[in-house]
Length: 308
Image (cartoon, rainbow, N blue to C red):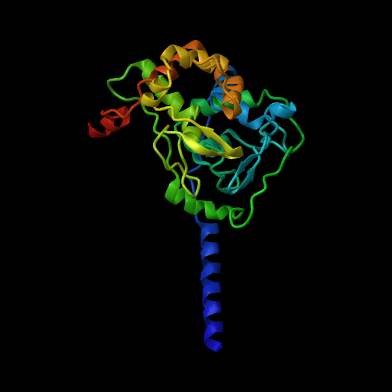
């Protein structure tokens, strides 16, 4: 009996020590310093391209802009996109540009806590200081909304945020958006949008048991929130489905597919609140990249610079 009690105590101490260790485990890099002046017009464009408006606005119930979006139902719980208006209590009015940079590029809150991967921050890792400054300037122009529309509902053990630090260590994979040598400026702009800001892979790439991206890149995902699915948008599959560059450009503006059908589900919202606001050049860049995005050889400009 004493042996059993001793074992229980040891296990308890180990578990407690592990929990404390997770709580104290620092994440993220040194706090950034964003001192650039932002362009609100460019920031508003980036907010559309990045899905901020589509995710953080509950358009179904005609909610206020950026005051909180409709919950995402997942196997881990229901995640409600928060209020990101300048309200001091319910929104991000008490934040600084540095807080925004850390949240977007590292997925870390102003309090140093990790965000759930339902927030696709891994796709925003390459946002520049100017991008952050522009977004900050744009968010400052949005009317403050003094309400929290919906709370997230995440059960045990996923409600223990410190456990996300283990997820970050094993499954976090920041997007690669650096230009590739030997590719046109248009193709590289499409790569920057698809792999980064527009975070197409967040829906169109499969996920593993712990929610991390764990499938063929852009190869489709049958387990989206709400029992939805996203098809493969790899080049070969798009071609087999009758897509062309022109058809993609048109669909990203109108939501109408080559067959005359229309996008449904979350993709309809992506078009309505996001890609339809992009300029023609960016929609075409996305189409150029997707219709020629099978794996290619070559090094990124960053990699080449390191070799010199």
